[in-house]
Length: 389
Image (cartoon, one colour):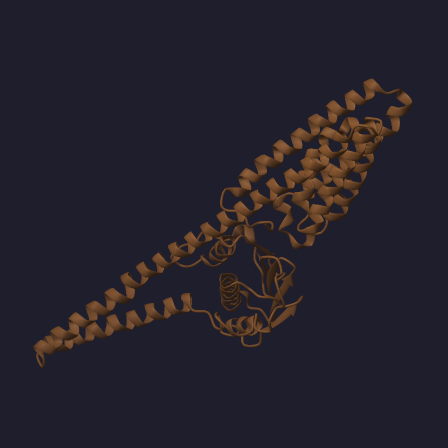
């Protein structure tokens, strides 16, 4: 599962698991270090303890960089990978030289699976299990085959369990997204009932009354009231259509659809594409279009910008959207709460993106322009992407 796709409340549970994992690593490292020092001479202790200290430092740094709160930031997304490679290499050396530290392999295994995705995660956890097996086999004098096979079997079992948990989380996230879509449909149904349907029904009653009393003066009054209701109804309908429809949602190239959506508000805006195009799920496509519309509408209404641009980026397991303007900017921390006069735009964009397991950030300051950046997770690449994606 890609970072950020956990269901609501999953991040909090994930954080608690991380705390237990890191505390367990610290306790086991201290216990293993004490055991090693008590069983070996000071000459042996020096370099081994120094290597153990380096492993602890690398673990702390990698755990901090791979934390879910940091992993969604694109500028940080690759920072922890070299450190994780260094950690696995240092740990493998340590556990082979000093098998007393083998118990800490569990924490290294799970951290490797959290930091890496796909084959890289299997490789890192496999190296951890293999190094532990070699270290314990060496400790037995190269005679106890169980010491060799035990860590390998445990690593395979943990891999199966971890993969099962990830699949369950993905299914839960999909179920909750589907429930959110159903709730949104119900909300739209209520909106249509309370605005369009009720207004049309009232207008029909007034027109029927006017028909019965025509040509009395009361008929003209009823027709005028019906006309006013129909005007309001038309306005409500246009608002709903603007909210629910998105140009090119079901078909057509996504960059063209984004450009069409953006040029409803900024005629000169262009869409740039980075990365290799790939299939985009309909709900993600819809969210990108809505964010583009909302962001460019804000530029038109508030930014007083001379230039603006939209950048669509394809990553291996995610799609990104950056909407930039060189306008007057603002302080994101000082945005007023939503009210009847507005203020719902940024909150609505963030909710729409986060509902799909993504992240939305706003970078702006007075006089410095604004960047609205969204990143939405996708499934692993399953085939060639089409031009219309």
